[in-house]
Length: 236
Ligand SMILES: Nc1nc2c(c(=O)[nH]1)N[C@H]1C(S)=C(S)[C@@H](COP(=O)(O)O)O[C@H]1N2
Ligand SMILES: [Mo]
Image (tube, rainbow, N blue to C red; front, side):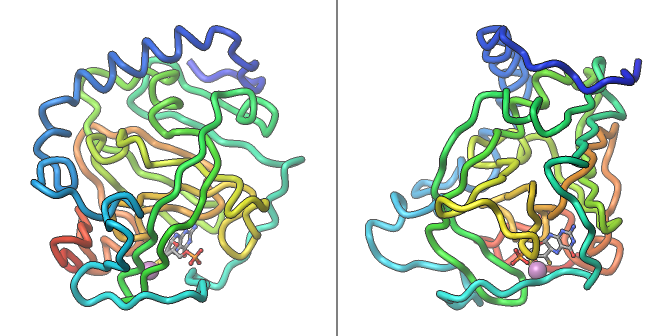
């Protein structure tokens, strides 16, 4: 049932935490088998796993610049006109305006950013909302398996829920202490530190829960459905 008004801020944070844990329990086995968790020495989760050494996946080179990569369409999204919809295979569709997003539990996490065009940026300090928090609120149907993230530039990208639920997958509004610049997807983008960066939509406007997988923009053009940088998993 779609709601017309933005979802009011939740003051029942414990309920969110409980719902999140229940959802993660449902995907526990798949998550345990996924790269980055199943590896003996998990990599790609930021500085702590690098033991202080720069370390990037095969075929990647570290950069200290931050290139901009997108379709060349720069949508005019601001906090004032921001709207994020969560719909599809969910029991409780959500519509969040900027205030509703900021009312959710906020976290900070430092992680790496691997673009499939071979550059990696290490140790970006992100702030935002865990994707799993929003999914817990939206309550994916029992048979939901994937999601398609939509950007306001009409970009799409797909990922399985066992990846989407990882703790470092954020809807981020702040990077290195500053509001996320528009060219990097501000006011809100998704990040997927354990997958190539194309899995994180800039100017995020919709999370569509799916029963089964559906290719997004780059996936339709030959890029990997799973996109694991530590497995050099670039193409289909
Ligand atoms: N909405 C949207 N999100 C997007 C893209 C895009 O074209 N549109 N490009 C993707 C790709 S290929 C990469 S590598 C990263 C680049 O993010 P950056 O421009 O902040 O470096 O965003 C991803 N998310
Ligand atoms: Mo990319």
